[in-house]
Length: 113
Image (tube, rainbow, N blue to C red; front, side):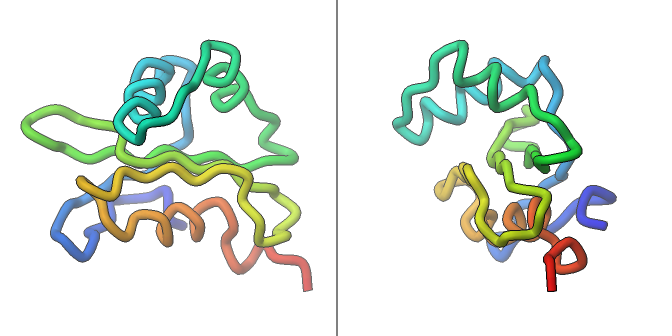
């Protein structure tokens, strides 16, 4: 399972995937800002509040400059349709994180045959 342990990206950055918490709101707002995206309070609330029976969500954290930073976030449909609603990844800090996030929210074993 991708949510256990940490994963090393091609540039050597180690990321830890975990389920999102409501306390991740400031970090998610910061990630949006670093990516040049606008996210209001309602948008952030909707991203962090989800029904795990119908959607998967995952946060990716990395230690950067002695601080744990949210470097990626993804939300996907649990039906295994292969289409994620949202994938955010900071390419300057964690290039290649998109593929790991997609695998976490749309694992092959969840895909409908």
